[in-house]
Image 1 (cartoon, helix red, strand yellow):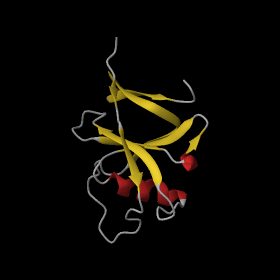
Image 2: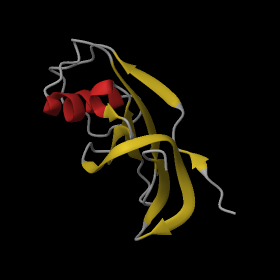
Image 3: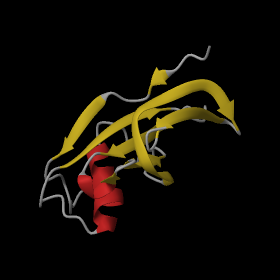
Length: 129
């Protein structure tokens, strides 16, 4: 029997965050500054203005490839990003680089103890499966 760990359990609300800040982009992204990553790398490319409304998302961080650095997982919760099978999710490295975009993703997001090609496996609920 495989042991699984819930990847994230904390909900976050995006409330008019620094859409156009004069501060330099962080060198490292964590759960403490992930709102900036969501604004700059998810909302703005979609031409969504975070000042117009609150865009909900859930996020988590863990080291998926044993490099000592956490990857960041963002599961959008706003109707713009969701359909009948789930919502769009994004996997970023800690520098803010997009590693993968997943569609029709829903909770729970579970981590496995197994690895493939150097990356920890994780399981997502998708479209009722």
